[in-house]
Image (cartoon, rainbow, N blue to C red; front, side, top):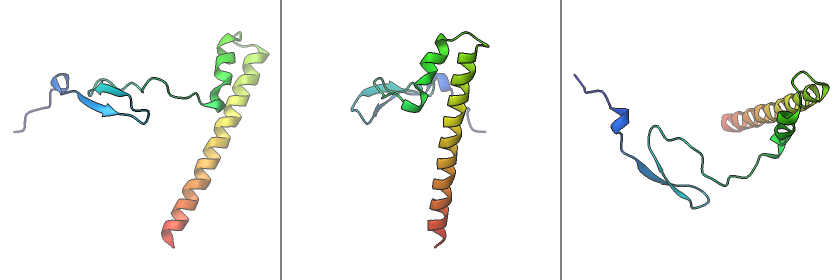
Length: 89
């Protein structure tokens, strides 16, 4: 019968990210590298945190974020269809 893997004792490994920042990672250490650029479409989140819950400002920002999410999801769907179409040819 195989022994179970003890995740606490799993060895750490060094990973080099695109910005040449070396970090120690293990099974339990899944942080992103420091210094990743911000995502422009998510910039309104900072303003959302400053608005009052239930206010018109909150509703406007949430609507904007949902519309941007929908646009991204649509573009991803178009890209996937294009890739699948290209693979079928």
